[in-house]
Image 1: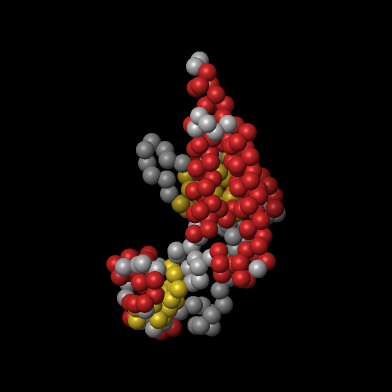
Image 2: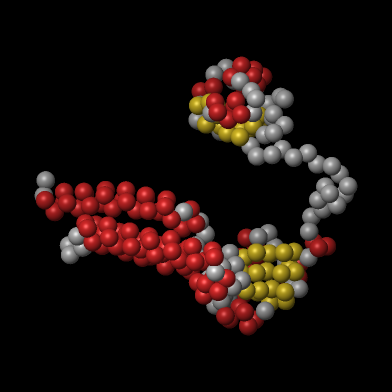
Length: 240
């Protein structure tokens, strides 16, 4: 094999593994909705990784040094970002109000360089199709739009109607692609015998037939079967 190709493969694998380890060290925020600061981090890391793989003048040691240095700077900046309010104001832009009491704030629209069409699209993404129904629309640091509809346009909640609602809690994954998540099942105080009885009640003879099954706090099992004979899978609720 050509020496250059072999060297590129080795460097690619090495830098890839190192980048994963350093990204885990820096935390999840980098892969969530990005702020401007996160975007700069991503571009910097990507540039270093690309140069370390294909750049002829960029040695492996240079790549490792650059990645570690940038990672340390990111961690330090993140720490300062958490501890210092002034640093947060410098690093992050402040949230900007774009709609107030159904009226578009034109000056702020210009400041964030957002067109009316883009604003209306973002409102529709938040299920707000009528500008007059919006009390506040605020652009957050990561570019997302937070929308508060007017009180008389918000849907009624059980609490407002004096109805006591039962919480179903978070759904536990019980079966994933035919495999039982035994730890989740036991943490719910249940066993495989109970699970099989629930599957039998839905005419499911084998766990391998189940694509997904989830359990809520009321012991209700949501089952989605695997596709059989090109038929669409469907969800069903088991019996408590």
